[in-house]
Image (cartoon, rainbow, N blue to C red; front, side, top):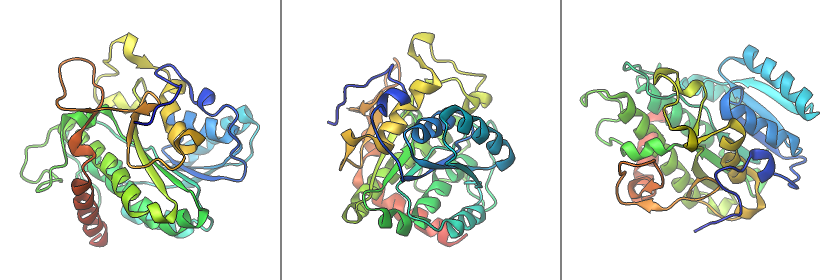
Length: 305
């Protein structure tokens, strides 16, 4: 298992201390809030050219301006992207005209109380957290390949432990909608995407991993009544972004792909969720057969949209 000297309390800045990302081109989806903002801050401070891909570009520009001032880097840009809208994803891909070294699929929503659908008819959490990012990543494949040694980071969640992909009904047309089950499915899919990319694109020098950032109080919990994790198990946004930037840029993970990390280390596979604090990853989320099945299903979904 991949292990580092970093852990639960490590911050993004500590993980990237001494790492030079000058000249690296980076995209962070959802980089205008929560751990996404801290991910942008740390990568830009290390010298990377970072593009915040955001659904609300005006608000994102205000965040970018503050980050430019804080980091001293003018290489923080904003481009519009709504990952819940495949037409928006296609426009973003068409407008990206340079190589891409790092793609951080960070944007997400959680536990929508009522069933909502994307414009293409997919359940909203699946469409936002996974399918839009799948279309974005596949669409940027040539740009990732051109970079030589590119990395794709999928921000998943310990919520994946609440359920696998519902292969026969991912859009809840028969299964009764449950907010947490839908969230779990979407985050399991994010992990499986990393597994599939690592298997399919390794020869192109592209690696991919997924992560659980931990329990951080952000806008993500607005539908759950706020963060309910006991205080000793909570993280700051600086700590929450640490595993993201580790997977994105640390030399410690060179050549490592298709794995799931938490607290800056590879997580163990667990046989059941248990009643205690959520930790580890379910075998179904790392299964290569499941990864191939999801790739085929998602490819058909975006082709028909």
